[in-house]
Amino acid sequence: MKNHFSKSKYCRLWQCPKMLWMDKYKPEEKAEDATDDSRMEAGTEVGKLARELFGKPVDVTETVNGQLNLPAMTDRTQVEIEHETSVICEASFSYQGCYCAVDILKRENDGWAGNI
Image 1 (cartoon, one colour):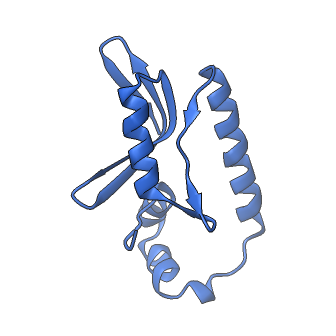
Image 2 (cartoon, rainbow, N blue to C red):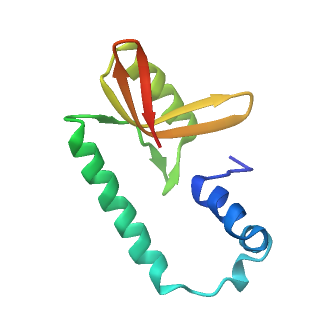
């Protein structure tokens, strides 16, 4: 996806618009931050713990050469919804060129509840 705008980029925009601009147009000038790796590891661990709360969720994450395969993820999400899967991790949707992923999508009696 050419214009990928993630949650972390959205947060950067609100923290400091210039930081987001630098990330996009001058990434080589970004100072290495020792906390980046630990923050990513912590986020991964929190994701694992959250998934454990929901029993046996289906994760629709697909990658090709280390990159997310967004079309495959949106297709797989639709398949899981049609199969009435109870909990879908990284549920992915695309509409008119816009992409959205929900960390955990849970089927409820009257519809779906998303946890981002």
